[in-house]
Image (cartoon, rainbow, N blue to C red; front, side, top):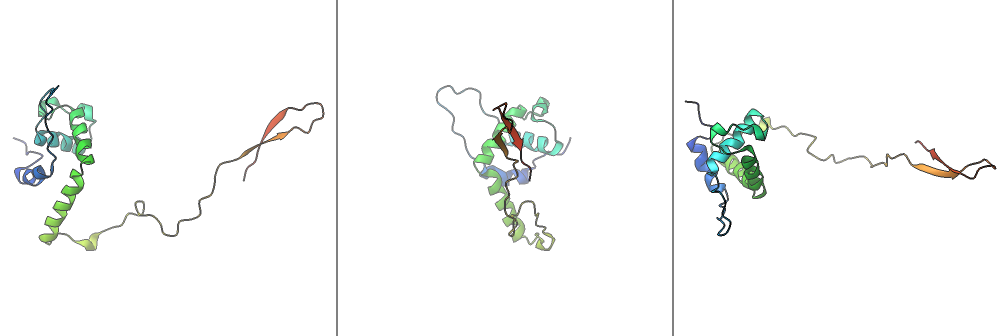
Length: 144
């Protein structure tokens, strides 16, 4: 039997962070899938890199669209940032974080001495033709 994507130990940390959805009284529709199944589908798609709509139904995780919607819902509710903080605090407490190996990515940090923004558009001026026989307007491009 293959190793599950979400082991019981990880699930005990994740489950309390997930928001509880209340069931609607009218127009209840289908029962929502269990969060653990949906999270398994989300992790499978993110790990394998397959498109959401290609999630195998045989996995029992629901459709790819169901997993995608739940991912977005959990993102809006702050689940991933809370999970990140919880796991970081556990690693800090266990002295398993090595900050000597941290790298700052310059593409995500604003440069302090950023240059002046220059308008890079090429203006087009409209001038009257020099011809005395025609009073048509013509466009002249000005390049910098």
